[in-house]
Amino acid sequence: MDGLSETGTSLGRHVDGLRATWQARVLDAARDRMMLAVTSILAHSYDSAAMWTLFNVVRPQCWDMGRQSMRPPFLTSIGKVDKSGRIIAKTKLRDDEMLPRDAIVFKSTRDFTRELRNLADRTKLSDRERLEFFAAARKWVGSDMRLDPTMDPRDPDAKRLVN
Image 1 (tube, one colour):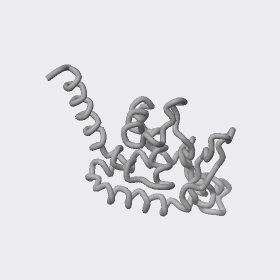
Image 2 (cartoon, rainbow, N blue to C red; image 1 turned 90 degrees about the vertical axis):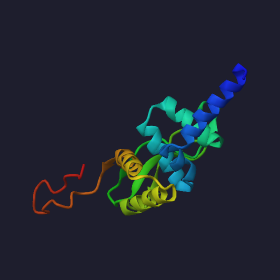
Image 3 (tube, rainbow, N blue to C red; image 1 turned 180 degrees about the vertical axis):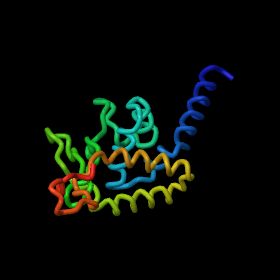
């Protein structure tokens, strides 16, 4: 076998191994707003060089090779729970937008959890993979602006936030 064939075979094994990871399976199965969320969850959880490789293998159509960045739409921040309980994040919808703006990604934390579970079920994640996926998703939601439900409203500190 010549060196070129061996390199191609080795690269093919590497790509197949990468596609078998839970990160690649979840990214490949995600659609619409879940694709935006999963892309952001992974981008904020792992090394940027590793994510660049993963995105190019699994979703090359989402990547602008000329600028080495994602093609809009994409989330530019981690998620946060607003005072109404919705999960919002900074979103860039078009190339011509100068600054990203807050957008509602999920109507509630319950909606977010349900979508994550459905995606984990569709991709048949193992228990260990589910734990890693949900841990990354929990880290992605960086703040909760709702009032602490355990606080006594008569307490002068009743406006204390959950996080």
